[in-house]
Image (cartoon, rainbow, N blue to C red; front, side, top):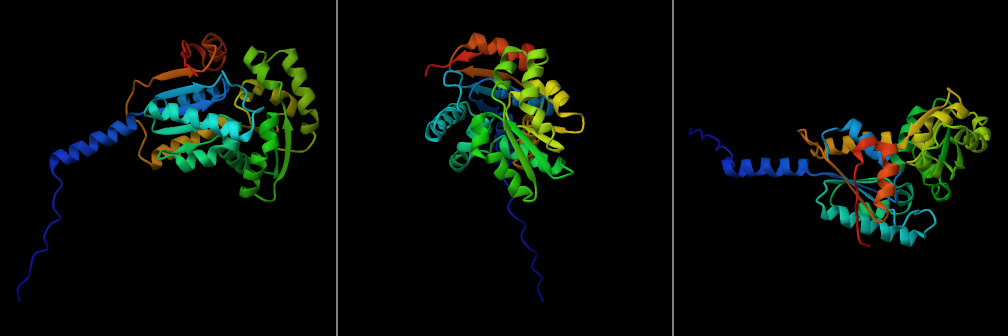
Length: 290
């Protein structure tokens, strides 16, 4: 009997292997794109920079059309598509929708059109709260538009149908954060006005459902009490971004990360207010013509 030796699989040419490795490295070196209707998404940038310090970031704040919460769903979707297109043209490898309103209204459509990972801020925050609660009572504070959308409630119910969910709109927290009034008596009084009744509901977990709200953690915690865990949706989103990058082999392997900032109006104000979110890292912003 003649024994035939199994033929070895043809080896990939060395040049092709080198080219494939270079292409993979180039994909990993691309920046992460982030957009928000304004400045609040910088809390997501801060969380990402802390968790993924080697990643470069391109941020677009649509300050010329802020706020999105007063706009129709069709308009918010159009703005979100335009923001995404701008960032795609910058060669991003993943997109973070740091605006709660866009996440509620446009995320599914953006994900359906994209060939890169697209991550919103609602699902990560809801998932973190669903894991954290012990007594199955969760609160959500956000802007009027986000509360009206019901997206946090839907996301929480999908994860744990038995949860008791309490929601509260806290619109004045946004201007307080942007003015830097985050730990004075005015901020404390507004927090008590919004949150005193919520603090009596028995919740043990509270989602900060607006990217501005983490700046007011101290007064929110003082009003809610030490027994209530605060869920920062920016931090939760950064955790999801890291997992998605790992899943798609997109984590950057190196140093020298950069951050670029673009706005659609008033770059001077963006830099001034942005310093409250990120410090000296926001030293300039490019204004787009729209």
